[in-house]
Amino acid sequence: MGIIGLSARRGWASQAHLPALRLLDGFEVRALSASSAESARRAAEKYGVARSFGTAGELTEADEVDLVVVTVKVPDHREIIQSALAAGKMVFSEWPLGNGLAEAEELAASAAERGLRTFTGLQARSAPVVRYLRDLVADGYVGEVLSTSLVASGGGWGADFPENGAYLLDRANGATMLTIPFGHTMDGLAMVLGDVEKVTAVTATRHREVEDPQSGRVYRPNVADQVVFGGVLSSGAVASVHYRGGFSRGTNFHWEINGTDGDLVVTGDTGHLQLGEFSIDGAHGSDTKLSPLPVPERYFAPALQELRGTPAYNVGAAYAQIRHDLAQDRAEVPDFAHGARHHRLLDRIERAAEHA
Image 1 (tube, rainbow, N blue to C red):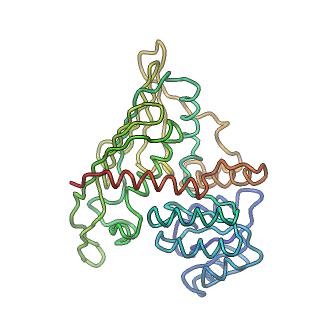
Image 2 (image 1 turned 120 degrees about the vertical axis):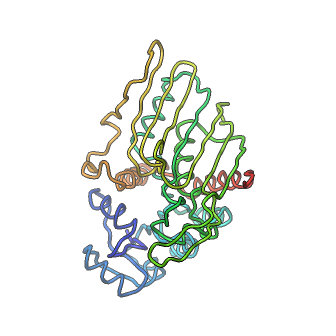
Image 3 (image 1 turned 180 degrees about the horizontal axis):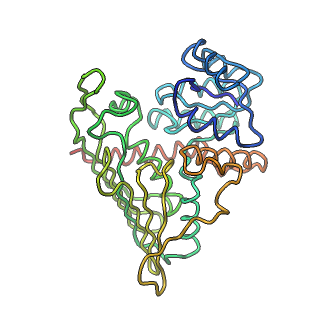
């Protein structure tokens, strides 16, 4: 493994990727790169990584690296991933895969031309709660699915200045509420209930000014902080999803699946299905009220026990599946082709949207 974007100070790589990899057999973090040679050296010392590089290009050329992990901001994905693919390396890229559909399709095509294994960080698919929900529906718990409705809060993109600052407020950077929490959740929804066939949408920017509390500078976001999707799934089920920027004093995640013989309700305190903690309640047949449906232990990886309840767990579960995929020559973890298809759906939704 070589991780691009592993910092000694902070970041998703140190919060999620590294803790998970250190608990799993079959992976060894041999190299890292950061924003500068000095930053990389400090990170290597802190985490005990043998090699450090000041540039991503140097890391992708390192002979001791088999799998390049890309955890930097979205605008930098294309150049780094193309460098890794040109070096003949497998690549795991955080989501979004590219800065827009065109980049994602280009990266998927490059990987396919070279016959290289790739992995996209849509880790909601690895979440035990999502996998259990998929099986409940597939096993007929609700009968035929008639409709599904979901309302959630994006966390960022609200009244407060976001943790990563101005980067998230400019749609040109590709890191928006539509692509991140909405995008992750829609991929999980598709895993459980099937692909989207028909699309209608409305988007709006309701928080027109956001102030940085540190500098006092006022930003005017050009990203949607309201996304309303309505559509029809491949099964014929009707779907509605509403994401709101920021947090609600009421509901931050509520997902219902309604069928001919039952109902399922998923709740949580964040709209980020890929990293939050969620619970399932259900009722079917002659049941008159919902009851808790705890996720069975078989859906959890014993090696990741200490990460349960943290954002690192689902990333670790994805890596565990990658290890299995490589050993068995399977492809359950989303690859770049899947990532490009999902970008295509988000692009359809954005193009279909009436922006209020």
